[in-house]
Image 1 (cartoon, rainbow, N blue to C red):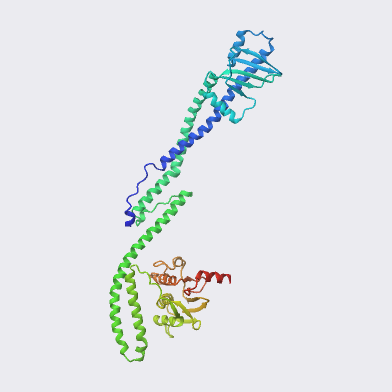
Image 2 (image 1 turned 90 degrees about the vertical axis):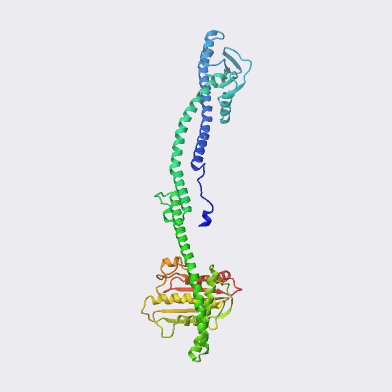
Length: 486
């Protein structure tokens, strides 16, 4: 854990997710209010102008009916004042008649035809209404009463601008109230639904990082079924697995130290036993002469293995010293090492192609087959008393092109599902109480070093391990594809 602690404590950011959420919520609400305000003020302006045109149409009926010049000036001014216009003009046929005028302006600054108003024209008109001079003269055109072609009024921009500013102020006040309420509701909803759970997950990750081997630092999963709930459950599973892995690593470190100490002394003991065994070669007993070389070879293997374990600490296996080796004598050597004779309670059946050879390291393959066969013997002995007709170990071998195929099977109880999930992992894949699973892990490592493959065959009585050892010049993947296509 030193490499994690060296990075120093992790601090929560000053400007966290909650602050960013608040700023984004304010920004989005302001954008929405602008999008609402622009069409609102445009519609208000159109309605205001249409109201003036409606009043002008009513006045036009009175003014048009009166004979020319018969409307008193005071009445005309009152009518124009009620409309808010400086002049009212109606076109009929080819003539334009000035129905009333209080003050004829020298020029008009903007023309608006309300008979056909597009969206862009309405927005542009609202812009001009707000920001043009209050003394600007607007010429507004609309439908005329009776048989008139159109009616137009001349008005100053000041009353329209004043009305639009008043409307804008009212909209602003209402928007601020609505925005504040919406902002508070949205912020609180997001805060309780997302920010608080994320803070909780963040605090847990920081706490777990400080002491990942403490099971109490694992996050407590809530009952949520959404993405946050899935994240919590996956995080809890990951933390539990990591805690278990770290505990296992600590045990392995302690075990490695203990094994190194044991191996150091065991190597010295084996060396002494080897010196004593050397003297057996001088004994003339035929049985002693038969077994003494095998005993010496076994002691040499044990000493080499102890030495490699000490230098491994690290214990990687040495690269295989590959050469073509006969398989049948190798299998016979495994049987003798296990002490299985013709009158043993466990049957030993060998079915190997005559003259079968494999391109492999002799000692490595001896260890692979010995580990597999020893596991089979232990599985069968667990249901003692044994019967050689029922309790059997079978070793078969054949060549398929450039690949040697060997199978080691037994008629034992097989592997439980949990052991199958971690079959070739040390301290995890053992099916025997008190077992370590090291034998299968070592076998898998040695087979992989040869570029081969080892797997458990499904659907067989007991356990059957299938080994493929390709010759050095053979690509196992290409060989597998070739077999599949055939």
